[in-house]
Length: 569
Image (cartoon, rainbow, N blue to C red; front, side, top):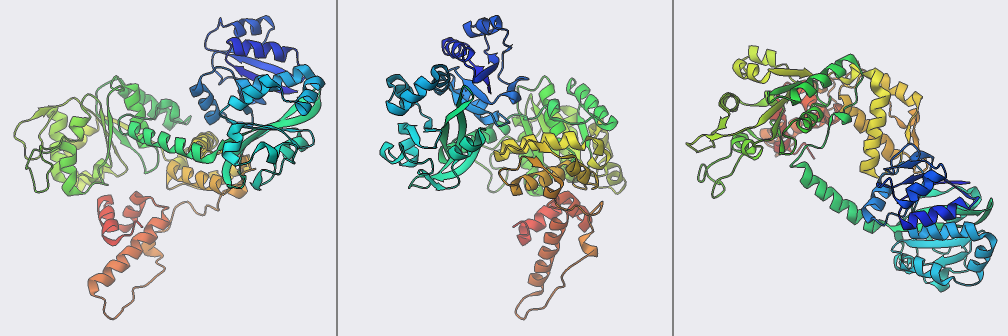
């Protein structure tokens, strides 16, 4: 018996519910509609069937089939994009067809084999989804124009032919479903003479406990890729203007993390400057996003600036803007800076410890006077900006050695929040890993269901110098290398993580400089420097802060040398 969730309790959903109530092959788990008083919702309650206002509910993971009769394309796309288990998603029109196969039992099955049902044909033929139906022997019964458009195969080439006829590369999902009686979802394969890349969902048709065939829905990968590209482009535009994380995205039950989250929530309710402190990769930017989204500034801009990634010569004009003709190459008419762009919103200054003394002085004036002066300007401009700063360096030591202003430190340190490194949060490893797996699933389009205890234990044996960022990289790599039929990350998928901290490249150099006739000393020194930087980045898995620290230079100097020597390639 197939467990079914119906989304949409209007006329179509009500009709479908009536049909399924008379079927022995289907069990209705839940009726979903945003209107509690919709006809289908009332009917469901009359038969003691659970109802819900959202398709994301306690019954979602129990459903074998999710039927969308809402008629709302955005709802259908949301379910198709976010459903996290093996349930087959079927449009309402197709679902009615399958339900009628159950209701009319052998009579309708026989009718489908011998002659085309006019109404059935019209519904399937008008669907934009490519649909393929086969009988219990795996012979083609029905296809629609969308199927022909995607595969390039006509009715004559499919109807009555084996289910393998349309496959160019891969195994027949129809035959697999007929053998196992279990639905399959999200299988990549190539079909037809055009070698079209598609994603296939197939479900069995079971009537009175007997297998009568299977129905497949084919999605064109190129269309999905196009939509994905457009979505990512839109997300990039949105992310430049607003924060994308909230406190719900921060995982942490340890005392240190609970304290940090509570402090961040309190600070969000005030206009006070916040200083986020912690090692690289601990989630300082995540906290900055959450603080902005929790504040009364959440509907205004959230601007992010990595102070170490922008060259010293450009950072001042980027932060404070400049007037027309302020310097050679300046944009005509001048340009507003990040402070003006973030007015009435929040400005996140990451790597604040890398600011030069000159910019430190200007930033101090901004925090004291709430006004900025553009480069080349003479008139102060009042601003109302919430500054959230972050650093992974010891500011107190920087004050002692004269590289950071003490008065600026006291201005920034009004609300310090210390974020614990991952090595002190190993008790949260399982929750963190599951949260990151869900995030990676959405980014990579995968359906990994979880992580085993032996894999978690293996992760706990490592001290994670790169913190949560390194953990996300390791899990992402594991998911990429997993086979498509693997659903759980196991210890074998996790690479060997040796030691509690990486060796310093200077102490374990694997190369020596060499002299080549014709090369200048500068060229040889540059080549050697590039190799050192490349090895440092490899040792610390791309973590530039740790690499710079091990080399005894600032992050800003590392960026400069990377650009100069092409070490980032």
